[in-house]
Amino acid sequence: MDKSRQQFEEWRSKNKSSAINLFDVWQASRESLINSLEPVGYIDNAESIDLEHGRVCYLYKDCIDKINIPLYRLDK
Image (tube, rainbow, N blue to C red; front, top):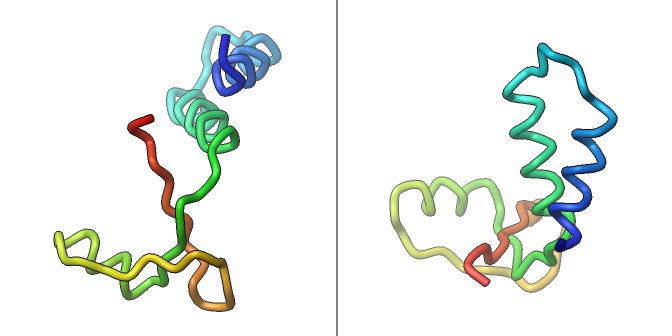
């Protein structure tokens, strides 16, 4: 079992309520996946809008003051 799946299963075993909020499950699953990844780069808020519209944006290698939105490669 990979690390992200193991982290999610640990969260799930601690929260065995019959009325688990679907958003909480999704958030825990998302966090376990992202926590096991390293960002490939960072963008700023203005460039995130460009991404939403399918435009090209510059990917910064390091996280600095306003350039702090991480991007992850999920297809590996």
